[in-house]
Image 1: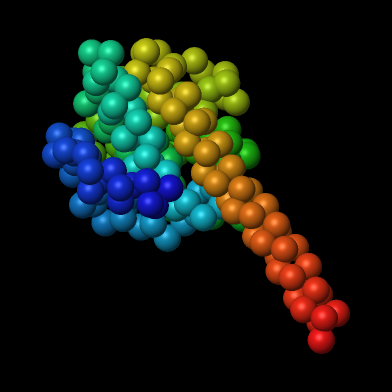
Image 2: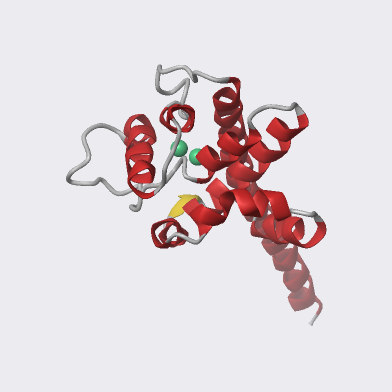
Length: 180
Ligand SMILES: [Fe+2]
Ligand SMILES: [Fe+2]
């Protein structure tokens, strides 16, 4: 995922995308998302960045409100804790509560429209029952799931490759040992 981000920054004219998320990425709290893992090796920051990037591309292509979609996506997981560790002050499971929490956190730092707030709150649909109130919000929920799945598969694939590489190395060295 990191490679994808750097490739994207290197080869695509991303001036408009970066200008939309500039306010967010320059924020100290948003930067702290780099300290927390979201899915395996992907940080919360990189995950939000990728979701924002895909929302930007899709919504722009279909002449939707790509600015709101990109802004909401960049902070849709704005929480500063490791969600695998039980938080003493958290009521309910992370999956059900963090959309609302991210919206509260983002609203304290940025001036968000009601549409952007709705997108953040409902991004966990259908895990949470609240259905997105806009087409951009619906796109955000699907893009979020796509990114989460690819971030997870990326690690599973590399682990499988490592296992395979280890097996080949084992066979190779066993063969050498038998020969000498
Ligand atoms: Fe989320
Ligand atoms: Fe997410």
